[in-house]
Length: 418
Ligand code: LLP
Image (cartoon, rainbow, N blue to C red; front, side):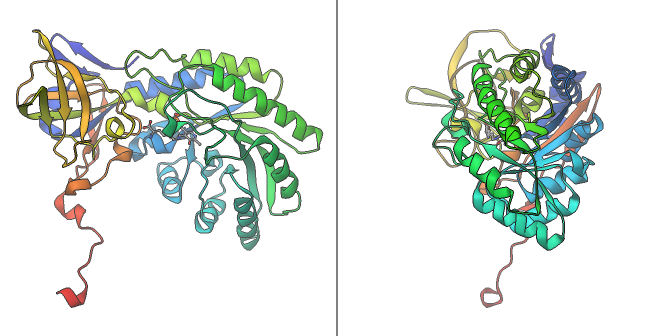
């Protein structure tokens, strides 16, 4: 459930009419609902309430400082994949001992920053990373808390770009290799083995793959404990899907139930790394219709947001619902909603039945709260969009729209060209 609803003909975010917001904040602009973010976080939290657990929000899904702060205030931790995300999470007030660090390419300097802040856990994804982390920890005279990220080789039945637990994925290590790495880490004195971690993919719309993965991982945990390893943390990753169109993903409650059932009496602390399920349907991208154009068999609606603002449709062929901010009746026609970027792949929707729209009116691209702004770029020298947080009948700019001078930040013309 989210708080983007029509009241009469006007689309609102909570108690704010989006038309008014678009006029004041300008477009393109990302709009997030505080009530929806809070509700989604709390529902996920409740799904695991009766287990020792920690929700480490996947910062990559939406890394705006205000949004991270919102989760920090609700007791959330963070799942990070870079030094930059560590910096954001810490700046937002997420305590270091609630931060887990995933990713296959942590540099020595990023490891150092994370060790110095005192993070909860490193999810290690290769033997060479294990050795590097031990060396960096030794240099600092500290122990690095680790889990090995295992790849359970499960097909999560999602888009191939976001399936991470397949045999051919670059992520994690196979179950047999993980056993070797746990053995190896015994000889690396600056590592402290804490747990096991896994993450099989994103936008997963069935519980089956999660259960299958957990079955394999539980077996590994038991095996490791049998060998004398102290495994007290189990990181189940993220990946629970959301309805973009007609998908019917399990609710967090259902997912939680299935996980708890499979966990049985395994014990330890469960870490969860949800991203999309919390922020996805909590945000929209507002855009203005610039022009309409007929070309051959096609009807185009040209809007002021492009693939640089929201790349998911172009990159993955993802579906985002498009709602007119001022609802109208009348027959719907199939249209391509395209942006101003000079690429044929620049579209927000193709062959989408929409009512007649006119220049100057606003459209709301739904379910854009996850992997929206964070994946945006300055391609075509387009300043990145503003981000706005709605709170009841009020709204706050949580990221200013970039200006032209921001486009040039850090660029220099060398002396010989002056
Ligand atoms: N943990 C790890 C280790 C991850 O790699 C990811 C996402 C998550 C947690 C959070 O997954 P979520 O709960 O959000 O599904 N850009 C793509 C999604 C990439 C996901 C990458 N990893 C998209 O727009 O669909």
